[in-house]
Length: 266
Ligand code: C5P
Image 1 (cartoon, rainbow, N blue to C red):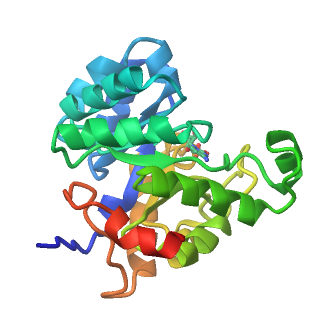
Image 2 (cartoon, rainbow, N blue to C red; image 1 turned 120 degrees about the horizontal axis):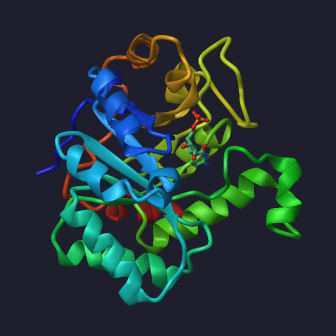
């Protein structure tokens, strides 16, 4: 049976714990008691705090953003296996991961009959824009078609969704209907500093363009009142969601995305 849960703003906001020390991350998690989904990445991994933090976050949903690079199938499977054990909801794979690597990640999760981690590809960083395309992919001239090409290949290999921002949200949503998952970073509430994000949208815009989840770091972490900043974003997401419009499936669902996503990919 299909489990279509109407996710609310509080389920769709993912706060990026971009801080160096696990103690600081835990303080933020405690302070943001209105947030249920957190992203951990390289900073905490490099300082050695990641395993301890994952243990502490077992009651929350966790997104491990390591943009896992290509490696042999055995190594990739071991990483995915650990994510299954740690109850990780989302895991990012590097855009450079070749098809056999993605297939190995998918097979490792399926072998554990696990709902997570959902595998997400980052086709093009949101701190880059069309002017950077020539350096990333010499010969490519159109950013939208480049992002679509990478996302399509990743979905066909077994990924569940993608990380995209700005107008690429709409471009990808039109090409890849739900249940393909779209997570958008580069979120900047009106009036907030853009920092290094070149392709950014407000929370409401990102939802209307077709994002399922929003990743927000500095606009919340650097706010004098982070809890209140998170609340404002959750409210903005809820306001942007028209009743019955979203059919985003709960990421904890066991169902494969590819049975629905694949026909649109040929
Ligand atoms: O502070 P800010 O809201 O810009 O943080 C965005 C988060 O999303 C960071 O953790 C960053 O690593 C991540 N991210 C991104 N662009 C991508 C993929 C991930 O900004 N394409």
